[in-house]
Image (cartoon, rainbow, N blue to C red; front, side, top):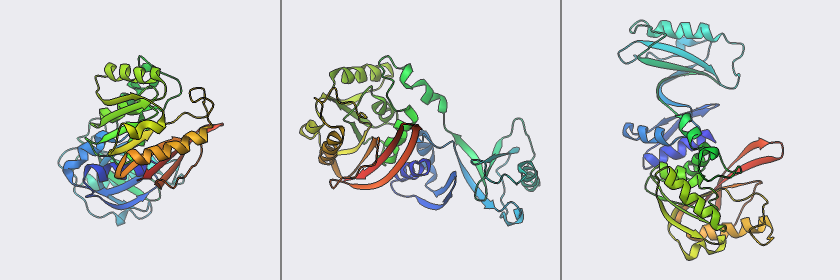
Amino acid sequence: MPRAEAVSCSLAESDGDCIVYVSGPGYVALAVPPESIPFIAGRLALTHGIGRYIGSFDPEKISDLAPFDLPFGSFAVKAKRFKGMMEDVDSQKLVREVGALFSKKNSVDLKHPDIVVKMLMSDRVHLFIEEYRTEADLFEKRKVGERPFFSPISLHPKYARALINLTGVKRGGTVLDPFCGTGGIAIEAAEMGMKAIVSDFDPQMVAGTEENMDFYGLRLHGTGVMDIGEISQHWSDIDAVATDPPYGRSTKTGGEDIDRIYARSFISISRVLRPGGSAGVVLPHEMDTSEMKLEKLFPQRVHGSLTRYYHIFRA
């Protein structure tokens, strides 16, 4: 899911001028216009860092690393294994070897380097110059318990943002959440410069979302209290729907079967999307529909009794 989010964001922010060169466990190497990189970095939720790709090599063949001149300044090499890969390789020995190559033209400064060369130990050893780090603290400041109106059953902000990003919606586009709950998805959409629209069957949730948006100084571009089946009567030509419907809670639906609600949701969502628009829908199990094309599906195990499935549909 992190790799798919990175690619979707890069395509959106570069107007499709994005080439995937290589990807593997814990990384993806893309070619995008340089001016789009700050905007891509500002959107990503599941990526830890972004940098300029130097190259890759097998740990026993560091000579395969093509000559590369670092920018002017001091440097440090920092290694990380992806999920325990290359356990039999001495990471510090590799750090010293890579450092020796770059120290021919640049000075080493382990405490306050001008340049950080990240070494990812995965299927191969990958090197990149770190330029951006995801600001995880910002997500923590927007998590459920920090909002004036909240419910414990809600996506963490970074996963709400990832869901939006997986749809590939562009900045300035419209994002509708028809099961808005406490507004977590709308908050992230507005934070990324999109036009957030919300609705919910429960008027308390819509009012709570408005309160939360005001708390963060964000604007809603449309609201409504309505059943999911009514959204196409109010909106059309929506760029993306991103939503996390209730899991098995039918008290607000007159006892209607939850899978029936999901099925009706697919019909309504397909009607409000513009041609080529996309929908990110989180469900407690896999589902498909004839109304839209299922492009991607990502399971996320939450705990023993709950796995979330992130569905990405295209109209």
